[in-house]
Length: 417
Image 1 (cartoon, one colour):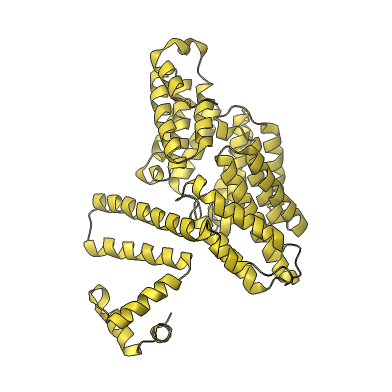
Image 2 (cartoon, one colour):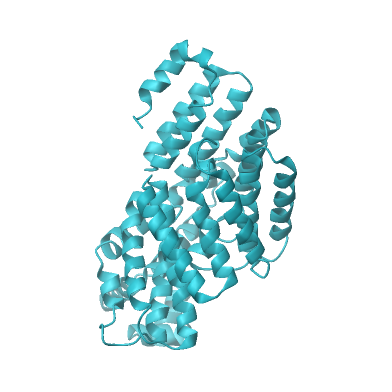
């Protein structure tokens, strides 16, 4: 807001707000104004409150004039704080259903643009928490939101609002499917993925169809299971169709679809296909990044694009699946940064893939040690599928390793299937 608008919002004078801005962090508002500021913060949306707290943390870091090492430590503290903040918002508001109750329209009413905007905002707020909040915490508000959106699709609404409602419903159903899959709940995952595809198909939108189809391929992939099991040909067929449908999509969507297809092809030993689609993935990264919102816009390849850690991890995984252990090991080591370690699920994935390279390099003790770290990280992140990935790499061990004490120790630590 401008100073004038903010003053009016608070019921304060413009000169008072100007004085606050001039004084910066040294202001001490009068009690009546402090109450107005507290009320304004309480009434802010979850996304606004998240942005407010993030900016405060940035300002504290700048004002402190921290060294490079201290800034890294402070970044960790800030990430932890933001994660706690988002978790509190979700568990206190979204999971209780209060936000959905405010958005719910009476059954005899149609759906207007303001209601659709409210659901878009809610979906985007939760999508921002995808990397910061455990899936077992997020899954309840996301599935509740998906179920509420599905009830709105049969209501009367304008053609423009129907396009928007289809898009947000497909994305939230896909998010619910992804979270359920990460919690190793295949029945619920398949249900929500199927709903996402149905809504996307009804929308007659090629890009939305590609996004829903691409995400749904996860249930057939062998990658989350350490390269074992699944139905790779089915996953490849779905991703190939998705890539073809996404020709006119934004660079963000084309990048993650080609990346996923490249890795699936590596899993079946197709080096040419892997190189081709990784090339298309990197070409898409060179284009202006789509400033997307919601699950499809935020949850893949980072919030707005791909960070180096993700790129190194994906290249390393592909090379490991193709049997090129030394090259894979080098890239996976570059992915293991403090930044990557702060997203527990991603950290566990890198560790598990690194352990798989140790299997290729015939290093049983190192493989067991790294898999134990990956197991601890997956359990701490609340990701049962991460445990399945560990179990998949354990299945790659040569049978003659079974007698080694560290292998037996790992087997005792692995939760029962």
